[in-house]
Image (tube, rainbow, N blue to C red):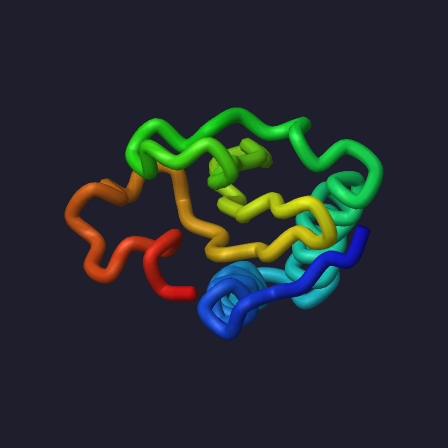
Length: 102
């Protein structure tokens, strides 16, 4: 199963890396690597994540990684990573919704 990252998701990773990098380049790279490793496990277990309650779509799921929600869409042939967002953020106020972008 192929894993693809959307531009918003890549931008989210860069923002997280830049924020952590202010304190430590090492920990920033390590943290991003751990997020990517968590997503790569979806290749073998695409339904591992829970359904995103706000999405009301069966194929929009999320992994919880520390304080982050990694939202993705699982289709039979590939995984599309939609966003990586801090769990404290209110996704219901975000427009457009990550699952409606693509």
